[in-house]
Image 1: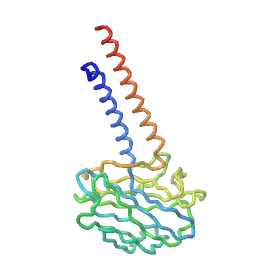
Image 2: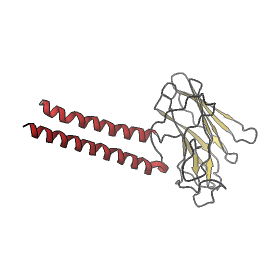
Image 3: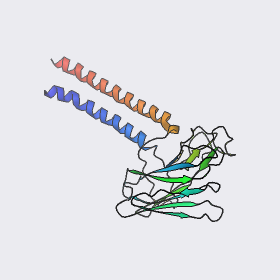
Image 4: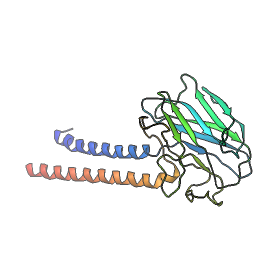
Length: 242
């Protein structure tokens, strides 16, 4: 490869790297704790709670899920490396499902784990909300508990499972852009401002795919434009020196 060819390739690689950074940052910004389930009102179901570990310097060691008061837990499948407790609700709160990691089974940074629970008849209403608390090995506690009340997600929305999209949404809530079996969620620090905020990671859900695609397209377009401009300028300059 000639020196002139190397000079032309180097800026192209740099621009491509910038485009990759746009893709990574856009995808990372959409990570959530999610609740997923194929549910039918009045029928039992299996729910899955998908939990990403988002702090770079710590692992996830405990997950606590608050179940709605009108939803009964029938069983919780065993998960290797995790101890599970089902605690009765107090103070008007629903049952709590608690998973605690054994040594060596913590959720590592940028990894995720799925926790399952079998439930009794699903109540016939628009949606179910599962406030969730995530505890890290460094003592950081992250709460996923803010309701969605407008067109945009709140900073720290709770995991929500849509049961019947044709039913009336709860008063004051968003009118529901989700599909059945999906969730809207994101991390929320439940401690004071000194608590380090978790860095986002992993994948997006259906409610955020539009903005994500737009960001990716914009990043790729900018990268392509810069690459073409650099190559044209260098080609013109090399031609003038020939």
